[in-house]
Every structure is written in C-alpha cells, then in structure tokens.
Image 1: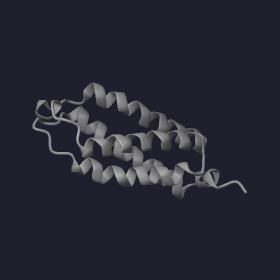
Image 2 (image 1 turned 90 degrees about the vertical axis):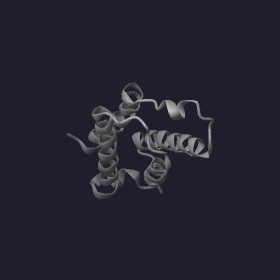
Image 3 (image 1 turned 45 degrees about the vertical axis):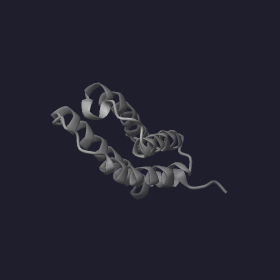
Image 4 (image 1 turned 180 degrees about the horizontal axis):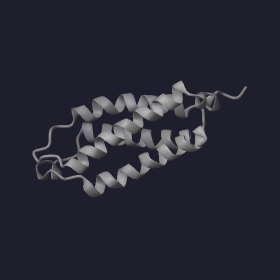
Length: 124
C-alpha cells in the first residue's frame, strides 16, 4: 500500500473517532450544568486547530505538519487540565482514548520519519 494512502486513511480514522467519542462517552452530571469557562474555550480552540491541521495534512500542504505537531503538543496539557470525572470511565471509552493517542503517534512518526515528509516540502 502506498504511504500517502495509508496516511490519509489514518486521518479518516481520526475523524471517525470524534463521533465515536460522542456516542460512547459519558456525560458527568456534575459538570453538565457548569458554565463555560476558559478551559472549555481553550479546548474548543484546540479542536478547531486539529480540524484545520487534518485538512491541511490530507491535502499535503506544508503548513499542516507544524500545525498538527503544535495541536498534539497543545492537546496534552489541555486534556490533562480537565477535572477528573465522578463517573468511572468505560472500557470502550478508554480504548478509544488510547487508540486516538496511538493514531497521533503514528501520524507524527509518518510525518517526520518516513518518505512522506518529502510531500510536505515547500514548493520553491
């Protein structure tokens, strides 16, 4: 299989994980009624950044690589800053969370350590 097709498939998997999180994820009633705070705004901005980077990566635009890397690095402290849920996390939700992290790592490895990096070079 060609590396670019595999990479695009990983991006599609990343996009498909979003509705899976919505369907499987549990809503903590303790935080459901809470007003929007700065952490929610930061998470929303991070999510928009990720979506934009996926589109740029799918089209092999040079800006996609650093933008996706920044989105992954920003996503780590944002996700760790959210308070712990009072509801125990289910195994399906935990599996999705780990799978999403593995996809992030696989995409970063492909972006920087394979021949795919040549497709992201700026055109002169």
